[in-house]
Amino acid sequence: MSAKTKVLIVLGTATLIALGVTIYIFADNFFKGRFPEQTTVIANTDVSDKTVDEALASMNAAEGLHMTVTKDDIAYTVDISSAVKRLFDTEQVEEAKSDISFFSYLFHTKVSKAVTPKNVEIDIKNLSELIDRALPETKYNTSDAYFDSDWNLIGEVQGDDIDFDKFLDRVKSDIAKGAEMDYQAADFYYHPKVKASDDNMQKVLKKVKKYKSMTVTIDMGCKHKEVLTSENICNQLVMKKGKLKFKKNWDSKYISELASRYNTYGKKRKFTTTKDGQIIVPPGNMGWLINQADSLKRLKKAMKKMKSTKIKMAYLNKGAAFGKENDIGNSYVEVSIKRQHVWVYKKGEVVLETDCVTGVPNKERMTHPGVHHIYAKQKDRWLGTMEVQGYHTHVDYFMPFNGGEGLHDAPWRGSFGGKIYITGGSHGCVNLPPAMAAKIYDLVSVGTPVIVYEDLDYK
Image 1 (cartoon, rainbow, N blue to C red):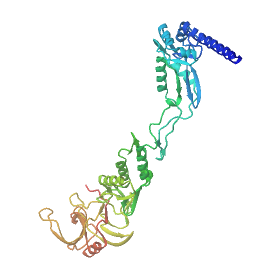
Image 2 (cartoon, helix red, strand yellow):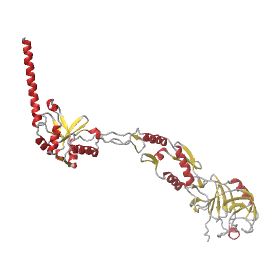
Image 3 (cartoon, rainbow, N blue to C red):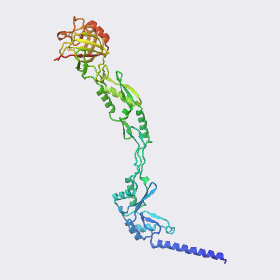
Image 4 (cartoon, rainbow, N blue to C red):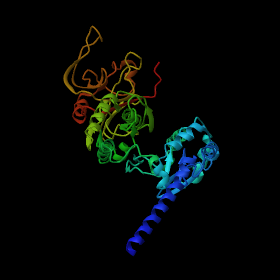
């Protein structure tokens, strides 16, 4: 036998002896009822190199019971043993040991097994506090995409705030199962429910952009305009359940507000007379009165276009000039019952004046004071009937301003002015000398204001 062969035999024998010793050591643990010496975790408790009884005691005492939470690539170990009470029995531990293979003992393999406790008690408040103290503070809170007060789309934020209800439910479940507790914090972050890229948000953004570039110009009449700006429009927008809407009844309130600002119909007016200074004239049939229903329809139709547009305000009645302080303007007919006189103004200047005869000052035949307007111009007209009014009179020029009351020629009269009207006045019309009636007819037009005033207290 050669020397080389002898050496090989010696080495082989030594190897077999070493292998046998190793196998004996691990087999000794295996057959003696101890858990492997290497890291052995049963129901999240380290029982390495412990007997079944020792392992059972450690598990029931929750020794070293912990969880691991990894956040931003940093692992945080949280000892939760003070918040948890568990009860296992010997049979469970023996079964867990019997599931560990001989080769796990032999090859030093890490062992981790889940065992469901017979009973579990968890102090949720204590558990929450332990986890909260162990983890770092939140850097960013998660938030949904939204539109700010100027209707700019603000994108969502993915924060690092943990949904603790969801997280604790998972932890409680794993404790109850006796499972390993190793978590990634990111798995439990809140997530935005609304993102800027969502189809709905993009649809809303598209509408908002249209409203931001939109104005509605309202022709109020007499070259006066009101402008509903894009800012005014956007101020009326709201988001409800993900839908872009206008505030309830905003448009009707807007029209109503314009009416309160500009309506003059049925209101008294300050008026500066030719001879008697400033007076208060009672309401008549002239004045601005917005047709709110029709105006609202026009506004709603304009808003549906979602682009700049113009509309006209609808009126039930109109004034001669635009403005709450003066809707009469500077071209009008002034009738003084006291002075029995008529002045015709054009652009602020008197272009004609004449004496007249107004109605008898009683309820049946008086000429009614107020701010009226000429609503027709007629020639060669018969006034009244014998059956109803008790007269049937022909006139060449008739300019009605208040029901049956109007300006007209009275060729049957030989004189005008003075006190004639008190006992010999008209039935409510303003009687004029024929030549003056013809001139006034040419000076006025339909819509010209007629201001009638007096200082007598008619009973």
